[in-house]
Amino acid sequence: MAEAYRFSPIHDTLTFHEALGYIATQGMALATKVFGHELAVDTLTIFSHTDQEHRFLDRLVRRYGPVSSFSHGQTLYINPRPDLEVAGNHIKYLGLRAPDDPVKPQVGYVDYPVTDYNAIHAANHPRVHEITSGRGQGLLEVRHPDFDVLGYVVREEEHND
Figure 1 (cartoon, rainbow, N blue to C red):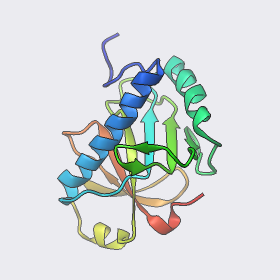
Figure 2: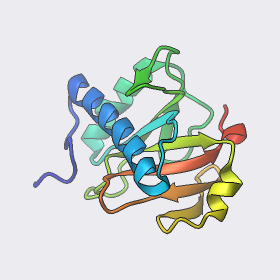
Figure 3: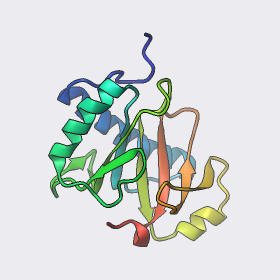
Figure 4: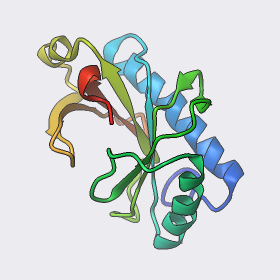
């Protein structure tokens, strides 16, 4: 099978950490490209692409802390120990999404908690679309063809366990 996405498959801790760093730095670059400035990242979620990869990653991410009440559907969230920092960002939620598309090109996504959600929404950025999360939360999905990560703008006040 040809490589479906960058880091395919993740089968060791080193590659997992490389993927997390990549998701964080690309998530910050995505915000800069779309909005013209960085946005803080507090959530890193990695997409698994096969059942075997998912089983490995599930065992690995659970070592980082307790399961978060943010978990829903195909996404497991962990509240990592307080010292988890990736690419200069304090990570509040570490996520793992079960495989839903073996050739999904994205490696994962980040969340950008903001206090000016309505202003960002009103700006009508062409790469930003409002969606409803699996938890029923309104958020703004940020996509750009130059990036294999996604970003989600979330209301800071709603982004708590």
